[in-house]
Length: 216
Image (tube, rainbow, N blue to C red; front, side):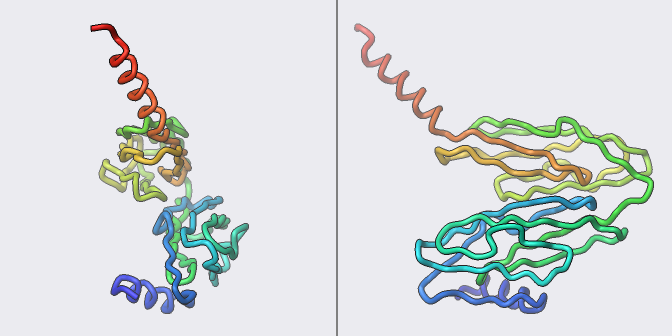
């Protein structure tokens, strides 16, 4: 087990989550965690491992429920439901999958504050790029933002206060399959869908073929 895995295993044990691994198996999660708004909601993460490697989800947090994917063999997807946070303080939960941990950080409720964002979704090309989301709220209300995927990073400084905007950056998708993520902005979900790179490669191939067939 690597030093990073040992540190993670220790953190999970401190939070009451056992960390174990099937002999000869390695496990990875597609995201280290998620920033959830105070209103709660549903989130998902993927488990990657070799075929035949079994795994189980360990959760001892009462406000987090495993909806599906509580156990599996080989690659799989885990769906969690997070209850609304009635308090004003942020809270954290750890969900373990064998030696790996998925952390849910939930914002505290902000009494008297309502938030709106626009747009609520974005489609990004395979090459990636920057996306801006507008936030509307009262001048005394503060807000933050975060993403559930490592290929998306928040560029704008957070937290913000009052009306404002947030910019996040999407890295290029080098895989052939499209992918999706959720960026939580001011406690509101903003869905990101990114195209795979296969189409661009096919178009480049067609262009090369047309060039080669062009009479000299």
